[in-house]
Amino acid sequence: MKQDIQFVRRDELKTKPDPNSLGFGRYYSDYMFSMDYNVENGWHDPKIVPYEPFMMEPAAMVFHYGQAVFEGLKAYKTGDGTIQLFRPEKNMKRLNDSCDRLCIPQIDEGFLLEAIKQLIIVEKDWIPQGEGTSLYIRPFIFSTEPYLGVRPSHQYKLLVILSPSGAYYGDQLSPVKIYVEEQYVRAVLGGVGHVKTAGNYAASMKAQEIAEENGYAQILWLDAKENKYVEEVGSMNIFFKINGELVTPQLNGSILPGVTRDSVIQLLQYWNVPVRETRVSIEEIFAAHERGELEEVFGAGTAAVISPVGELTWNGHSIVINDKQIGEVSQRLYDAITGIQLGSLEDPFGWTLEVDTVKA
Image (cartoon, rainbow, N blue to C red; front, side):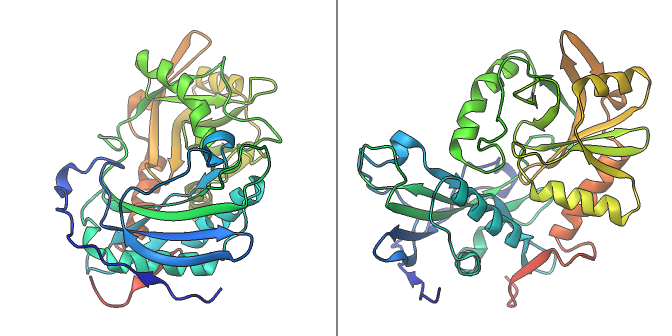
């Protein structure tokens, strides 16, 4: 795809928020990227336009049949002002994997990444610079054809919006309480649990709401068939350190292949720390705790990076992990990943991509 990206300038720029009180996903930059699809023209009309509401047909198919996918990645500003992305090609590929599963036309991954880079250059003053901060990037695609019939849409819109953000959780590395969900399920084999589609997250909210009402930060999801094998924690992948070895559920078609998950595995292998992808049951986790072998538990995802777990409750029983303190491996992983993202540590894997050679 070789298309020029049109730039539509807004009349007045927004007042930027206080970088010390950003929260996550609350503020949005001045501009967004937009592109449309129809059968006649394919993906076309790429442009950077003011961030603002837009009109949609009430019969747009996304409202009725849920064809919507998205991604999440971040831009970082290093100490010397360089702007860089972290493994963005993985997000572009996963977006296309999601499109494939929901019968949405494939995008040109290289072109979308270039468009994101251009958008970031325009909005570089929105990138916060400080510990735990970043510019969150949300590409998403949804069906727009006004038609009330169950089939793939013939029209779509792709948008990329930007949100300056602080830590996903207020106290980023404070271990959290997790409830092992036994009634509801997140995803099933053969379904859409391995892709990022809006319906996955809508279906998770009931269990999450109940957990929060009972003082838990997140849900640990079990498999839908036997209700015994660990899958994900909230919207993150999960890791357990058992007797010196890191264990994480293997990808099985209902677990999202997280970019941070893959980064954690590669780092552990690089450090010669034992790590294994396998099917792991919740009984095994509680048995390991009973033997005194469950040393650390943590979630891994783009938004939070590493989120330590201090307490697990399952089947009426609660266990405390590492005295509710962050573990050595959890801390080391967080420091390494964020250090590479912010340019303060060497990147031996070539994970970072510089957006602009001109310092911001």
